[in-house]
Image (tube, rainbow, N blue to C red):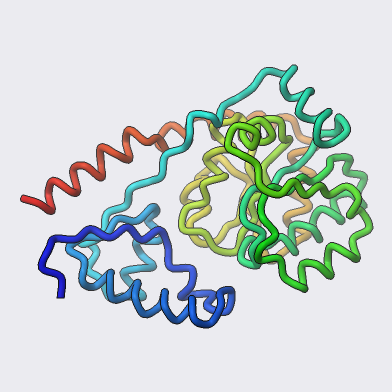
Amino acid sequence: KLTTPTVSVIHDINFEHRPKDLAWAHSLYYRYYFKKYAQLSRHIITVSQFSKDDIIQKYNITPNKISVVYNGVSNCFKPIQESKKVETQQKYTNSKEFFLFIGSLHKRKNIKNLLLAFDIYRENSGKNKLVIIGRKKWWDSDTENVYKNMNFKNEVIFLGQKDDDEMASILASAKALCFVSIFEGFGLPIVEAMKSNVPVITSNTSSMPEIASNAGLLVNPHNYNEIANAMDKIDNNDKIRTDLIQLGKKRSEIFNWELTTDKISKILHQINT
């Protein structure tokens, strides 16, 4: 039993929904201890209404014990000049426009369906490349088989990890972010793209509709034809792309560290009084 007032921060509980994505021992540890910490804590902070509802349901927590505090975004994510975009495209994609994914290359991130969608997009006369930023630590055999059998695998560029400043330049140079994960508690790249004046294609599952709101093209992440169609819309409909950029710019204003720290400070003060 905890005698000191404790505030736990639980980003999400993806391991409850997808336990097989983790090593058996890790999955067991998370599912045992996160529930215990959630029940023992005086208060819980999480990063989306989706995660709050999920924690309430899975761990039988009363709603007033959980506060939603959105993540902020680093100031390095911002629009860049056209000359810098040209320079970045020259460096990474042989001066071609590109779609971008950012994140760990984990099964939950749905790289397999992104690759299948990209192949369809290219078969339908799409010209953009696909750039993927993230470690291949959790790369699985299904995704590898899809990649090996792609018709346009030479148009996919894996950059591994990049530091924040370089990643910000690459993101701000992208035609769109394609973040079609299966499950997210927040989905930070969505907001990073919005801050960079880059349109967003993201999933209609878990927290992503909440974070993107009306400022993203929402797709079924299990339907690669739907993902491919969204790529095509971004590529061929300037009005959709411009509207998404403007909506994203407005939407991103609510995600900043000053608001985040202010809310957390108030929660900690209330717990101590």
